[in-house]
Image 1: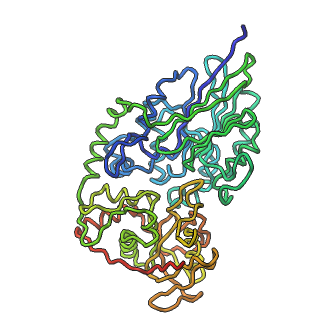
Image 2: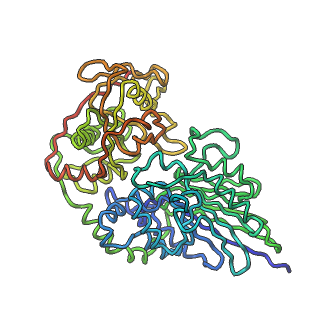
Image 3: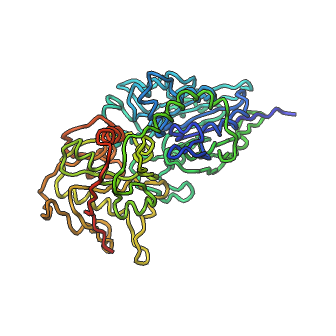
Length: 514
């Protein structure tokens, strides 16, 4: 009987530092977390498996915020777990640049896995040691693994974190390597921290094609790719077309992509099958808990510190849509801190997809569960024309359905993007939902005077939005007057500690007509 061959590929992506099954907002048991998936990962022998993480791994959870502040005291918790899991490869994600060059460099140096990134350069050299690898297994099967990252990072990232870095087109860079080595291997795997701009089956656009997501282009143009591993959009995708597979395993350690590849006696791919293993229901890996015991205990003490008291108003967020529809007091509070920290005339902020608000006794946990991003602040100069365009873009968040106000479905599919609705303070403005997109802002007033096209203002907002993140093109090239290097969450914590007893001046400055 002729010999057959097989290989298992396991993939995670967008774990964002959720290593343990903990809902950090209230410390309840979560149904996601890398330690749950580890019980499944450990079932596979390394002899004929590949374990690949597709990025956004070292930013996003309160544990990693704590480690970022205390990295001299503790080894990186993600590197510890990656090494315990015995990852083979890691592809950097866009959020992995958020804590700066040295943090990412240190992480890459600590993990045993090879960091692959073929399209990001530091000057003329690859940023990391490898862009691709050819792995040969004991059974003789040879696999080409190419790693690439979304080229859109300069549109979001704090410039100091990517200074001198060159982000090349991942399709072009991957294609060059694949063409060169495809005849020397039995399987081609492209691991891309990015998502899909179009539906793989019918070519219908999911999102505006800005270059942020090029998964569709990759799968269609690079026909020698057998398996396309993706991430970034936090979606569950498994699509097989002509014995080629494109897959994406969700986020926060909720799912593990399991791909089984069978080869015939000539080592040609005979079949590719896939499944998604859900973390929910799996047992927690106890050794993972032991590895993280010290840093997690210190993190919990840090999170439980009471730093202030809420006076008079209720700062808990019970309905996230209503919090946007009527501008929750927590928005006034964040904008107030941004205005005081910057000296700007206007301030803009948004609420994350899932936010808690503050309990009466405010803890660090409350703050990090309300402002979850590692954003810093930028002060820009904006005129009346661009201010109106900015507000018009924000007004696209709402739609009318049978006369009732709802959020635009575009903000929930293919990726949750409720954070792309900003609310401004320092002006009074009216959104009329009875008008079409682009014509909804019927009034903008500053100091009770209608804003003209030539009026100029200083505006403070986070670095993601100031760079045009969320397709806010009108903000992308505004004059930058000041940069505030402290993270917004850190500013909030310091402000609460200083003032202790919080009284929030709410401003009903956004009128929505329908």
